[in-house]
Each structure stands twice: as structure tokens, then as C-alpha cells.
Image (cartoon, rainbow, N blue to C red; front, side):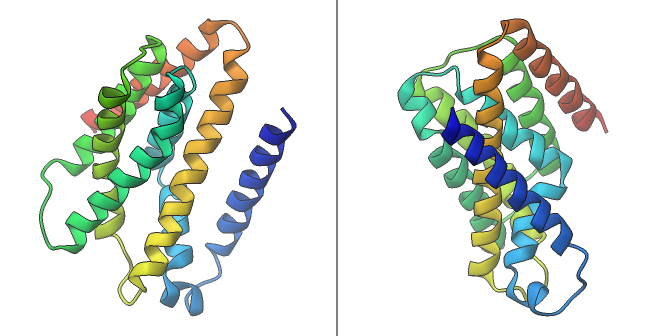
Length: 194
């Protein structure tokens, strides 16, 4: 429990520091791309909710799925960014992002347990859309590797925060988790419709 608390505090401090840095203007941060990459997933509500939801959902999965979730999340995100940087198109990106929030919410609300291959493929597929958006929104002149490192770190941090919240709520009545899932599904439906 102490390690979970330390992790949540550390991630909270990272998010606070990154948010403060977002208002520093241009200069070295914009040129390196690291801060831009770090902030992109944290400042987009759709990205934030989807990544946290996948982490939240992973808590109730098998040990192998829970342990593999960060790899599926990063793998999908990097693949999506690579598709964008390779000049390829991905139709329905915004719809895919909204659907990822909605479907992750449904998985949480229904307490669905999926085999690792199915759950991992689904998480990775969700994240391809998010990664594509990260890739297409890389600022001009940003260093690709620095930007990639930034959004990868933020993606993992958000996923682990979601996992931490899921672990805390798992100790309570399951209705709390179902409410979180239903709320996420509603927000995702709104994103898809909008």
C-alpha cells in the first residue's frame, strides 16, 4: 500500500509540474518536443480518460493481462504514431478515440474479464488511435525521439494512475467501479456523437 501511495504522489507531482511548464511559452521546451509530448496526453480529456480507464480495467484482469497492459498500451500508441509519421492515414481517428473511452467504460461497468490475447489486442487497438493523434499533432520542429519519450512517459503514468484508482476502488463495493465505468461509457458516447 505504501508503494501505491508513493506512486500516486509521484505521478501527481509529475502531472502538476508538467501542467505548470505548459505555460512557459516557446523556446527549449518546444524545440525539444519532450514537454509537448508529455503534455499532449495529459491535457486532452479523451486521451486522459481512455488511458486511465484501461489501467483501471486491468486491475480486475488475470495477472498476465494486468502485467501486460502497459506493454499493450505503449505498443499501440507507438504503432499509431508510427503510422502518422509514416505519412499513412487512419480513417475515423476521433471516432476511434471516443469509442475507446466508451468501450473501456463498458468493460469497467460490466466487470468484463477477457483472455489476455483478446484484452491486450483490444487495449492495443484503442491506443493506435490515440498514438495516431499524438503523431499528427507533434509540433513543427520538435525532436521526434524526445516527443515520443514524452508522450510514452505520460501514457504510462496515466495508465498507472488509473490502475492505482482501480486498485483502491476494488477494495470497496463493486458498485463504485460500475458507476465509474458507466460514467466513462456516457462520456465516450458523447465524444463519439460530438
